[in-house]
Image (cartoon, rainbow, N blue to C red; front, top):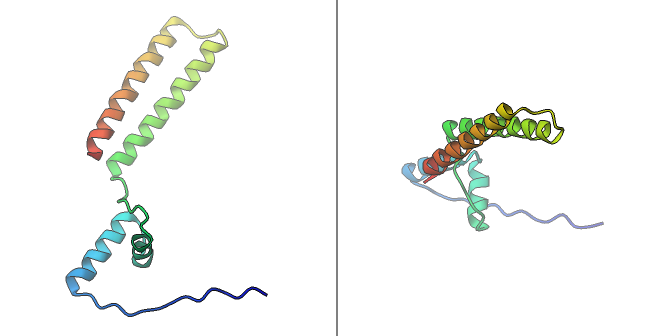
Length: 107
């Protein structure tokens, strides 16, 4: 039978300010304090969650992409009208605009 790997425990003292910083940073990333510290120790990327506004923009971009795919399918099936294709191009421009806004927010 394989031996279970042993976990190590240690005590760490932090100042109130350091502890609050740890709590804030872990919460911003959507991680527990333990998971935040282990990811840091392992050298893994730790990123803050996107803001609610950026999440909404991503969702909006997704919906526009779904609409563009529907128009593309109808064009390929030969049932789309020229107005549909123009509308698809307009939506594609909207996607590019939203992507630029999203990129600027991330900077």
